[in-house]
Amino acid sequence: MSRSGRPFLQIPGPTLVPERIVRAMSESIIDHRGPRFAALVRECLDGLKGVFQTERGHIVLYPGSGTGAWEAALVNTLSPGDRVLACVNGHFSTGFARVAQAYGIEVDRVEVPYGAGIPAAEVEARLRADGGHQIRALLAVHNETSTGVTSDIRAVHRAMDAARHPALLLVDTVSSLASIDFRMDEWGVDVTLTGPQKGLMLPPGMAILAVSDKALAASEKATCPRSYWDWAPILERNRRGEFPYTPATPLLFGLREALLMLNEEGLANVFQRHARLAEACRRAVRGMGLEILCRDPAEYSSTLTAVVMPAGSDSDAYIAHANTTLGMSLGVGLGEAKGKVFRIGHLGSLNELELLGGLAGVEMTLRSFGVAVPLGAGLAAAEAYLLQTG
Ligand SMILES: Cc1ncc(COP(=O)(O)O)c(C=O)c1O
Image (cartoon, rainbow, N blue to C red):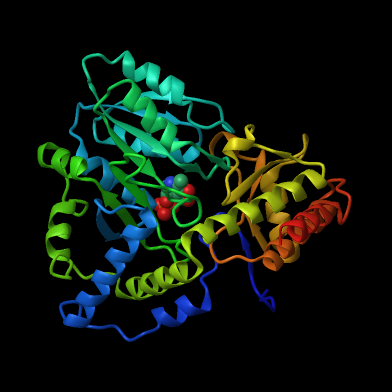
């Protein structure tokens, strides 16, 4: 059934694409070996550096997805038989480690339960125990999208420094970049990887990396098989404003517009907007009498809230119900959280009224699903907070 009005895609990405970006993407395709394209590539690469908060990093773009970006980060920096330490605290950090394993990389794990962030002290202890520096890289997910937990990457880097360990730091920022403060240079990150479909407000379809000089040097010795994901030919051709294959030109048109929009708002304001809407969402969830999966308030995610489904109710069934009754899409529980949580996305191009609409939808559909939420209590809590902080 088609519904009138704005779709309520309340999942933690892909997000709705703002009109400005849709219009920018509808521009006619241009010659990808011509001067207009070269200028477009330059603007995108320069603009992305600002979003990654890197001056020294090199940007690499592929048509692909976040999963491809994992693979690109790993195959360019590591060799089969290398050892890595993977911080695993949810479905996506598990996936990152799995890709490494598929390439014959030995994966040690720092494992914590769903709902917790990366324990920097344990990272430090594990690296100190590796006196022979066998561990070549540390894998971390900045914002674990399956649980709504943001880990402290600055603390992880400090732990590596404290252990005087030379491992590379590879960080997934798929659901944090351009929404939650992330400082590649300051935090000593060697490869930052992301996708376009969350904070960057674009449709899915790209894998985006920022790469340090240390990671570039590692790539010269890395022997994982690679062809499509080899970043060397891309870096080389990008210098001339080209790609080694036919690029996803409409996404680049959209990316240029997205970067303009982020600059107009100011990155600090973008982070602040996300933090404020996230807090309003959490207050609403508590107002409904429900629990948030993330345990430590210092690790609350600004881009999504994972809500624990009341005992006896299945979150998959509830999400299907919300979809059929109000046409609202909520994120499902992933991995160990399957059937146990639903996730409310509050990222990308989002404002107060849109958030409140989504929260009203959650209250109404929980109630019609049979969960005894007091109608209006969550909304009132969110509204009060937004009024106080407006
Ligand atoms: C943190 C994180 N990493 C990786 C991915 C995988 O990205 P993609 O689905 O674009 O392949 C996702 C997807 O949501 C994610 O949230």
